Amino acid sequence: MAEAGSFADKVKQQADIVRVVGEYVRLKKSGQNFTGLCPFHSEKSPSFAVHPVKQIYHCFGCGVGGDVFQFVMEMEKCGFPEAVRTVAEKCGIAVPAPRERSPEERKENQQRAQLVEMHREAQAFFVKCLEGTAEGKAARAYLEDRGLDKEAMARFGLGYAPSGGDVLLRHLKQRYPDKLLLESGLISRDQSGRLFDRFRRRVIFPIANEAGKIVAFGGRALGDDMPKYLNSPETPIYSKSNVLYHMDRAKEALRRQDFAVLVEGYMDAIAVARAGVSNVVASCGTSLAEAQIKLLGRFTKRVVVNYDPDTAGQAATERSLALLLEQDFEVRVLALPPIGDKKADPDLFIREKGAKAYLQQLKEAPPYVDYLIARARQMDLSSGEGKLRAVNYLMPYLQKIPNKLLRSEWATRISQQLRVDEPVLRESLRKAAAERRSEVKAKPELVGRPARPVERRLIRMLAEAEEFRVVLAQQLQESQLYLGLETEKIIAALILANLSGEPVQVTELTGMLEERERRLLFEILFEGPMEATWAEAESCLEALRKRQMERELAELQRQIEASAPGPQMRALLERKQTLMRQMLPPPAPAERPQ
Ligand SMILES: [Zn+2]
Image (tube, rainbow, N blue to C red):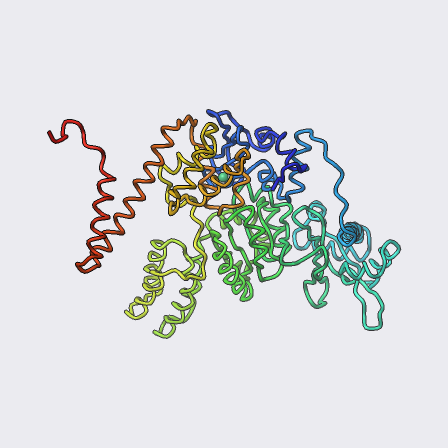
């Protein structure tokens, strides 16, 4: 990423990763490395390590790793240029003025900045309307009725859009051209070409992006106006499927608690956050988008889905479940018990039963399979046909469970709970449990099969043995002994780096590697001190050579067994003899024939 001679490269040469990481993580010296509690997953004993010589970090728990820029990008959730700037600032390196952008790019950036500024102004306007107007009084009464006091209204930036039809328009049109007003989605145009406010007579919820900038609004109708909820349209600064409500305020808690509570609406998110659960986000609407899941996945892979208990909410829960499972989330489902005869969404439940009762429910939220079985049991199970329907409903979810043992456990449980005695149904459940749908991506293995010690040693030498790493690379290249190894790609990348004549920069290699291989490489580089001799390198090469011969021998044996007697078989047998002689250690002196 950091091209030689570039500013990023300069920063990288001068920056000290221990100092930069140390600003986020309490690091302790441990041998040649520094260790601490991983900031990317929750843990009690440190498995996060920083290598001061190689200037890299690696977590043996969750597998993250990279150089100082990657660390800052992950930590600050920012892009590469911003990470370079941040590191430069932290290390006191002067930052050059940004490169001149293309005119279009500059114009787009300018427009986005203006739209963000317009939203900030609109937000202040809506807040003022809620606080200080006669109309706003009704909105305040509505919110108070929903249990929100002044402090809560201020904390979540709630506002009010008056009914006039052009109140916001008049407020904004001095400063912004019509075209930009229409771009913002705050102002619409009717058929006669007249401009008017999109939000009228509505309680306003500001929607912020991840960085906390307001980019859209949601409006709840105060009267019987339809629709009940109205959102900003898609604009240059807002894409519904990329934003989760309350994400900007939930980030820290998501990281700290390592799970998210996912709710449907603004009011739910606010109620849950006020109950003390800051790690709550709302999908704002019943369907969760894949981009929203990916956004959440950058902070945690564990989620409790707490959607409304109505039919739409249940359908949404099931749709979201499928999506979350596909993205490898660990999912629990909280279906709140009804209050009296009223179905309870999080907002209502907390208002009626209090924060403590909600927290208890949250703690006891069952894994999603339990939730689904409970749903299936509500179906008519009196007939074989009904049971078939219930089993078919559960099957696709069952097949998304990554772990095979767990799948078969659940299959047994399903047949018990649904009283499936029919052999045919039991058989199809058993079958479903035995195979996992290929559409579901398998969990990436943390590290593949542990690489053999010989390969690990060679990798270490290729990266660090300054006296002979280049010669070693040449020999491996010529003999091709590394082909077919578990670590083939890692070794190939290291050979290439060695033969380039430059010093080996570990983080430059990672572009050529899969994530799994990158992790393995980092893990190997963090292994204790490395003092290697050329003799050891030779013995490693010898071990590879032997392994290659063993493989050839096995292949020969296979061919011999498959072929009929004749000249071909004789040739195979001869080759086998030669190989076996080569593989035998030289006889010990005492056994030497006299
Ligand atoms: Zn970690």
